[in-house]
Image (cartoon, rainbow, N blue to C red; front, side, top):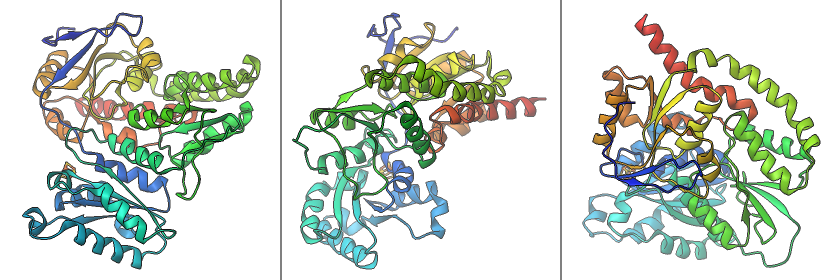
Length: 430
Ligand code: SF4
């Protein structure tokens, strides 16, 4: 590796492997949290997301979810126009008018999220106050919540964290002692949720629920006897609020790839006292099938080098999967934020030579990338085209959040997401 290292060393030394974690502060290239609406509206099936933002916000959400133009939409933008920005109109009155018109036309909406944006934050429109006011008016018809999806100091996956945090804040506190239950936290595609549900049942863990629920009317079971497993590594605030209610996190790697999925399931199985023999009996066939499917992509991935630009916050678990199960050489793992407790088990599994960088100074990172010359770079949409123009193969990080990639049955699909662009570059070069 011959990259220019000019990063201040902040050795967190948490992994026991003495891997330095550099911190970088500078210009960043990330998407905003509005992007999360695309997968959140698919998950919570009776919810509506009303972005309070500009035409830019409307274009972002609409273009990211272009397929929805043919269906009854479950998201929209209340446009803040020049009169609002100039303070000539009362933005609260305008918002009330839009919400009333929407709920009169769409009585099927049972939960409405008012989603803040950069413009709504700039004019200091207090959406939590608006939600409280509107809740009084629509009591028993529709729950109205708010969260921020703005691009000011956020990454795109923080939109999900903020949305789930608003759901926890809205859920009634449970004070009675209840039986032990397992909560899986983080949006998973329905197909993956069903696979995990079957696996937990086969293991003998019956009291399992998924958060967020598919239906907004479903209660959220969080109390002092709740054990929770994070399905996504970007839910710091949600996890904090869950723990405030007495629940305990089960420390584990994330369920990406075969190893991650096995460790994740095993961490819960151990707490539920499931015997190692039974665990093996349930998982063995699935692991073998997953290994067979994954083997198809190993010839293209093995020994290839990869660098991550900070974007989705999935970078560390993905780097672990690609290095340990696909034989890739991870040069740099850039991540916007690194929650060292949630990622402790992942950091243990990373190769010692990997350069981990939290935060971003995009020009410096581009210099390091050009110097490293990785075979493939994982980055946001804004950097992908310029890097491709320089002859560097890229993978859009946002695709890794849109696609079903968790669990045994998706391990090969996850590998394919990296194999496809590499294959394409090899063919183009031939
Ligand atoms: Fe752009 Fe901010 Fe709107 Fe996101 S929230 S689309 S970053 S203006």
